[in-house]
Image 1 (tube, rainbow, N blue to C red):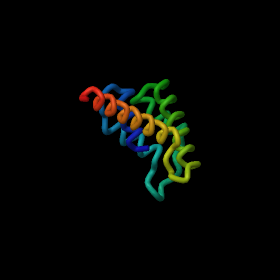
Image 2 (cartoon, rainbow, N blue to C red):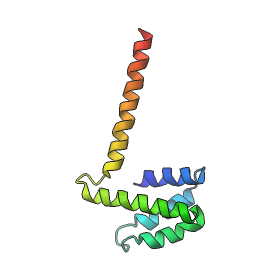
Image 3 (cartoon, rainbow, N blue to C red):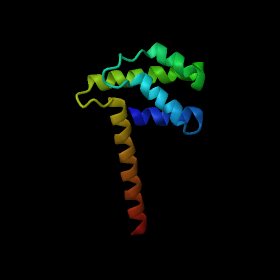
Length: 103
């Protein structure tokens, strides 16, 4: 989920921002021994960086992924697994197409 958070923050802001990404990661994925994440507080804390509307969308989407990860035995959200499968299938299709063009 850390990589997803970094990519999503970058897409919202339009540039990479390690401080905002780290803040989001620490708010939603606290280290062991810290208290459980509070999505409402995290959303409010991120609003100053992402804007009210975007922080709400971000928090909701990330919370959904966290619930999916919790429900999946691998600990990886099903949505991210499906996205990766689709990505790999597209790469394989492009490679096959390129091979056909060479022959």
